[in-house]
Length: 254
Ligand code: PAF
Image (tube, protein in one colour):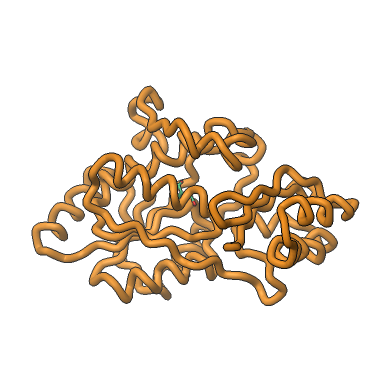
């Protein structure tokens, strides 16, 4: 496994792999890897001779400075997990190199990115789409793996790839859950013991309620849960809630 920090070096490697006709599977992440990321890497491994993982905590997609500053990081553990999952290259770019343009150029989607997460986190999806476009242009994969836990993100990236005629297959992988139903997320580590014990309620309520309204009514009865939204859209139910200082999102197919 090689660790690549320079964009030029990653581009050279991608060029060589493409010249050799080797299909590249790409898993972009912000690090603090867990079993959900491992499932994406496992799928990439099955589908491609080469798997590339990127670790980049993207500042432009955080709409709150405290969320960015408090984002969990454990590079050493991430590298152990990457090796265990037979990653070929770990790309860890620097933010000054990624944003050499000082974020003058941005990818703006003007419809779906305004709903759900986009409505509550202004600018979030512009940050996500911009960084993903940059990463795809550097890594030049044939297949891109994203988790359905961030379903809206997965669909927006899929649409962007198609809108810009990029020859990349975007593969959505099922959400991995803890035994009690809580969707795996790097942010779960921020939950204290009581919050962690309550957190599975989110998935349970989303999956068992007949309507979004019913789900919302059930969730607001919990003193420690602050509901941001519960919305049914195109046969999927989406929600975001706060548990103390931690924001959790989840979605289920209807
Ligand atoms: O889902 C994530 O971890 C991030 O939004 C992504 C896709 C790596 C872009 O920074």
